[in-house]
Length: 211
Image (cartoon, rainbow, N blue to C red; front, side):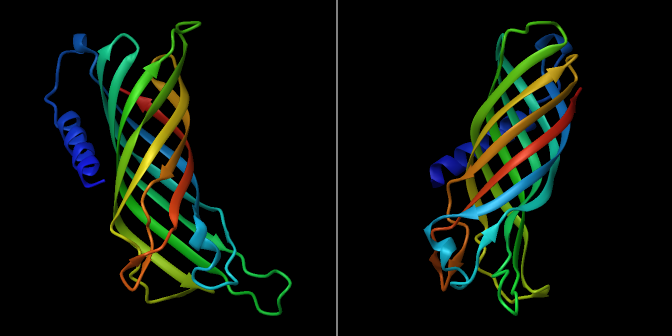
């Protein structure tokens, strides 16, 4: 995993720091903004932080920029830098006299490095786009609360490695939208230095503009 993380960072840095080229090369850039539907999952979710917790979806935002380097017609490498919010919420026992609501929010700087495939367009104004690849995320901030009160908890790990799968379309070569799923591959919570089998998952609905 460490070697893969180093590879992701190196590829992202190489593409993001590439010098400007003429428009003939087709080097692209753009901005994106979207909504996250996030959750945590894994065998240990059922018992963390206690047996009463029932984790559900939480909503958040994601946004940032990207550059893409064409390799051939319809194929490109796309590197992104995104601020993205993940985590989950817990609704407690709705039939209990006292409901304890846990909330976990984790903000990351995420760096996906994706292979992008653009399907042969049916028309000049509509192109299907598929993307897949690894994403390394660095924790910027985390907040763990119970019934709105912040808890002293430093068990959110500093990095998260994920796998991105995305499908979308480009409208008139500049506007685009996509739906992506980022599957967490790393254990993101630990207690007493021991990682728990809890991973991130997030579905993102994103819109953007390509320069």
